[in-house]
Image 1: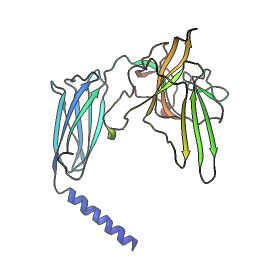
Image 2 (image 1 turned 135 degrees about the vertical axis):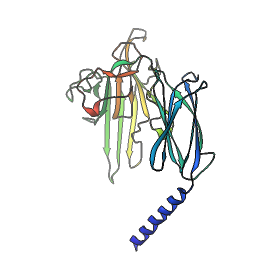
Image 3 (image 1 turned 30 degrees about the horizontal axis):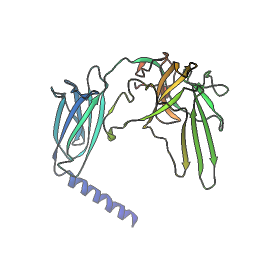
Image 4 (image 1 turned 90 degrees about the horizontal axis):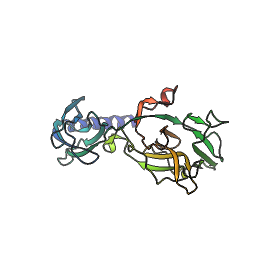
Length: 303
């Protein structure tokens, strides 16, 4: 009986899909491409991807004098993807779901696309890490230049960031876990920023962060909690600017500091550290990673 019902539902699904596929309708996409100042980017290459007869197709062309690119095509529905780029700019990508029920309003998309200029990418210490806390209930340092825990848990020398994990295993599959992020120097700190990282959520740039780390606004402590069965989970949208190895004078003014950024949430993230003192440039050149001998999964390929 169960098998018959499954077959029946499967046949209904085929019938519905066929019904959707009987008529094609036109979708329209209008992309307005601007720079970070809101000025139109002329001559950017726009590429709109879509499916037709189960095959991937695309419409491409340059933006006009107003930074506009338009595309349209007959389709059964589904999803549209787009990418916009130009020499001297980072590529921005996005996607849009049409669905299979034709809606004239929904099938006509107008989207503003921001292109970030390529500034001055620099060599940095950059690594993708997936870490477990080696010991609980005490701060353990991680050396960003070495790419490892400090001794005795690794080969690191300077604990740029201190991680303190606490785990409380309860009964009935419940547990409490917290991670506290601190720093060894008084003016060191962390500052969160969030960003779109999936094309389904809207346009996103290859350069996820700003070009420079902020001058101030850093917190000396960051607490992350994850309680089971309910609680906080790791979120790749969470990103952070960091300031480490900070030295201050007698009046509390910053004399020297090192700036960087973190993409992703703790303890699975990518970090970047500018080697130059007081340089807030965090635009990484993936071809000039100062950390050598990284394994494939540890390598960082985005700016």
